[in-house]
Length: 260
Image 1 (cartoon, helix red, strand yellow):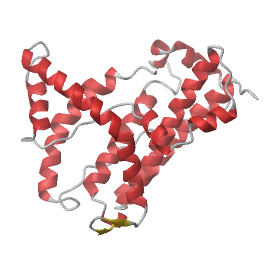
Image 2 (image 1 turned 180 degrees about the vertical axis):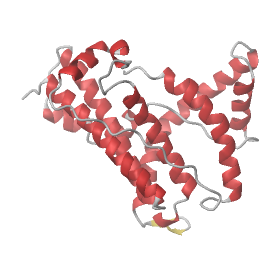
Image 3 (image 1 turned 90 degrees about the vertical axis):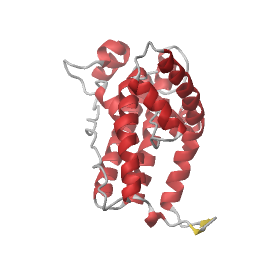
């Protein structure tokens, strides 16, 4: 039997709520030094974010006249990697200053958008983005598996307890950034909600949704101290944050803000 549009929208809302709850707990575990388990929860949170995007797309299809069944929902949300792919709302790049990517990012950040150097850097970054977008869902799924299970590896045994603080921070921060997009779009109705302007149909439907859950506010993981991360890695990531995060959040996240 076909499901109603309200049923699909309720699932969308509940999946967003679950994403926020998992990220909240992941941040707490990270702050307590349980880095691998924090990554596992963050990975599952990303899958719930992906589930919400899939359900939102099905809701739009249903509103457009297409029939949607529970079996279709199960099929669309059945694969881990598919949900990881659907939950990709932004891309973050990190690099050492002297690497090829680091130099491209430096050129893009230190030149005006109208300059030829900046345009060439944008073209190169677009190619890198496309390649990264293809492999990231599988990479994130693999990271979850490595963070959860003790299994044979090329170096002997995979040990989740060896997860580095910086690796966990970066994985968690990227997940929080993407959840923050949905949160800040105005899912929670208010006079300042921008969702009313970018997707009035969704805004009005959420306003009428009974028992709409309240989304947990996004929490930010603290930056790893030198004691938690090697000094070399700490310095390397400091450059990545100052350069790459600024570019990513200012340009790429907001360019993909509108729901699709």
